[in-house]
Amino acid sequence: MAKKEFKAESKRLLDLMINSIYTHKEIFLRELISNASDAIDKLCYLSLTDDKVGMDRGDFTIEISADKDKRTLTVRDNGIGMDKDELEDNLGVIAASGSYKFRKEAGENENVDIIGQFGVGFYSAFMVADEITVITKKYGAAQAYCWQSSGVDGYTVTECEKESVGTDIVMHLKEDTEDETYSEYLDEYRLRALIKKYSDYIRYPIRMLSSVQQKKEGGDPEKPEYETVEEMKTINSMVPLWQRKRSEVSDEEYEKFYQEIAHEFDKPQRIITVSAEGSVTYKALMFVPSKKPFNYQTEAFERGLQLYSAGVMIMDKCDALLPEYLRFVRGVVDSPDLSLNISRELLQHDRQLRVIARNLEKKVLADLDKFKKDDRAGYESFYANFGRSIGYGIAGEGGDTRRDELKELLLFYSSTEKKLSTLREYADRMREGQKYIYYAAGESAAQIDALPQTELLKEKNYEVLYLTGEADEFVLQNLHTYDEKPFRSIIDGDLELGDAEEESVEEKPELMQFVKETLGERIKEAKASRRLRTHPACMSAGQGFSFEMEKYFKNFDMPEPMKADRILELNTKHPSVLAMEAAMTQDKPKAELYAKLLYNQALLIAGLPLDDPSAYTDMVAELMK
Image (cartoon, rainbow, N blue to C red; front, side):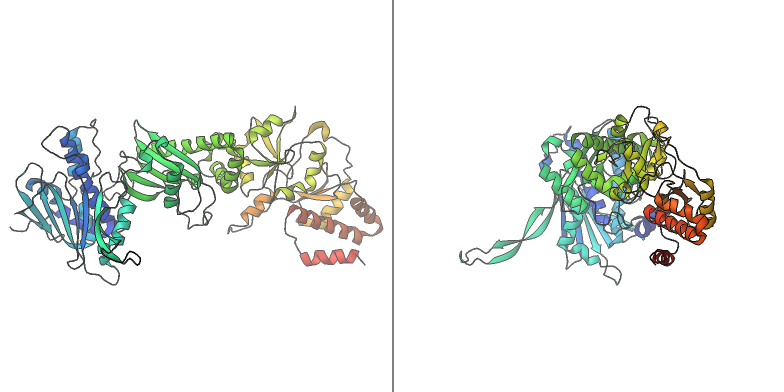
């Protein structure tokens, strides 16, 4: 029979598809297995109304076979098959989808689950094969047909012999090159790995001859000898965990599955299952890890859930299914309703995807809230690992839309309770008439607790939240208030405690002016402190940009460093400050030395770098003479 040419647009699409559409050549096997599954689905559907089919669900199978000598790989199914016209329609015109047409004919309301949509998956085989032969016989037909093509040059369709219904796709693999090793697709272990990776949950058994070790017959029982034989084995597991009811799956099964997809050895801390039907139908199985992945804070960490369509893996890491701040969540989502592009490797960002993403985010947050209430110790362990991510959910992009949910998940160390506290718990403990929720930011709870600025609040028994995460202060600034109470840093502004703070303080303007003149541009101002008790000095930044923010932004490459104001607060009752005041008239150089020493000590207490460490040590040595 004369060779027929593909239509011009089909030629262009075939060339594009082979060279551009698919990111990984290994995808071809997934596509052919999916097509085989579709063909079996169609015959299964017909068997519901046609008792002549004579096959039960357990009779259907997909077989994979490789012949290294002939360099051929075959994918065989016993599905519905194709007649001559369907070969012309489905394989002669690229992007003509028989599966899509079948779904339309069956009716949108029928319970028909077909994977194929675009009809180009078959042609992905040309990425690895230089010639493809399709031998097929349709159910109910007497004649079988053979479709053959070497790619864009065209195809032939001829009559042939085939005893049973179904389709055999025989690929002659390309010769190996320096860049590509096509022979790998003839290797048993490589094929098994690809089937497990992409098609493990195809609902029909995928069978392949596999090498197994067995005892030789007639050997010595005391010293048995073994031989390698080939047996037909089912490679795929067929029934995914997420398609089964939670009550039907053991914790051990969930743990094993988590370890497989997350490549971890620990158990998951939370298991979250979702089954949704309605405008978008999908099932999801998600896990919260019990520890941070080793590369979690690096660019190498890949976030996202595995995406399946009717049991076929479409993407290994679909980052559109959960927001960035929930990047620690692992798991899978399976939906037959998503709109895929022609390669199935990329999702169109359509309404269905957005609906699933929003629902999954809400489900995870609801589960974390329940976790916090039911198992506080376990939740605190989670927060130690991923609390920073929760904070980024508020301070990062889109935080305004989710702050009301996320603020209830935050934990901070309490100065009075000596343990982690929620904002709700702090608010419930607030004193009558207290205007602000007080906090202090620093590297650790111990370091914050030793700050001079905490003295007055400790004396008055006010609770302070210690913020030790690098983004915690940004989080509270984004929240602005909680329970209508503003947040107030005890380090970087007046405390406004009311009567408790209105104590007699000598302002000593001449002394403050002297200190300001001595230190010059190194400080914004010097002032008498209302919060110091036993310490002579501390450094504050006023309202707005804090010292902790200054430290945080040092990690970034910026045109000019961002610096907080430096306000030197002095305890006018402290002996050191009184000594400086006395020296102003008796020994001005010594008074200047005192001012510089107090300034440097305040920097050290605040965790800020000294302007000149060597000069500071010289000043200390000067006093020791």
